[in-house]
Length: 373
Image: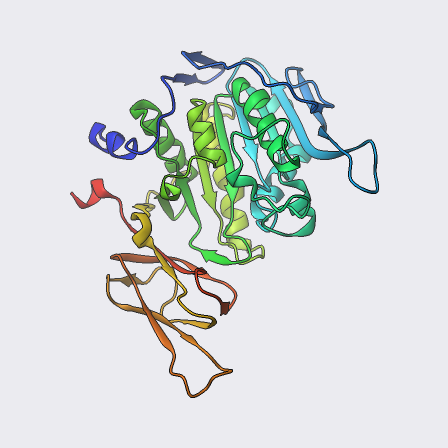
């Protein structure tokens, strides 16, 4: 990774002046911004700073129609041993994405504190109501958890969960792994995701950690500049940040699950929380790609049934026909053809055939700028 490459990745977001030095058995944070904790009614049933292994919940007081003094329970576990880095692992950011929650739950059950040097904060179902419903968004308040950061401790349940993470967990941490899949609406090439940041040193650390995951692709995803995501908030807090997209389609695939299990341990070994022998030797064949802004997306233009022309991974060119939308209930009307707007490969494809205007039908990933220059 060259200095020029780091600068290119760093071109989109500001994350504060932060330097995290990670070595086996020791973590040191220099210059992290610690902001005042906002008043909140949320509390944890575990000691976030205690030793050993603890499992419990973040409790968000919740007073719906059928439970006057109840609480939303967000599962959390803390595994701590020694003086190494603190890493937060998040799953269930969207409730219809399953590989990450499975892997984090396995770590909660199986990991012995003696296997690590540092602290893991393990959260397999952060968007817990959505996870239990198998939905992308929360059935309680209708919000997309990954568009609520930095949250609001006096807001709806979803905003309170994101506020707790920002106020109480990020200041304790050195790194953040946000394990996504494509969800019910998208099938994607399994990949590690890099969150852009204007902090060039943090950008280089993000890229190195994402490469350590050793996915078939490493993709830089800027979310069109949206800073309301968990990974954008983690970069704002100065954390080394890695995301994933593990296939998706609203299901679990053996290949993607095996990759997620392996990749998580690879990153934890890279960060020094696990011993190097816990990592799988890298294949070294992962390409670095990026989403080329709004041109990455092919959107439906009419109501109908989408027919894609190409499989995932196919190399395509801007202007090339991408697929067409049929109207079986109006058979005299010819299908409407959609075209790609960027050169690259087919990275994501809509899972349901039924579409309406504005639905994302296809996603294109292009070679990363540095590799094109």
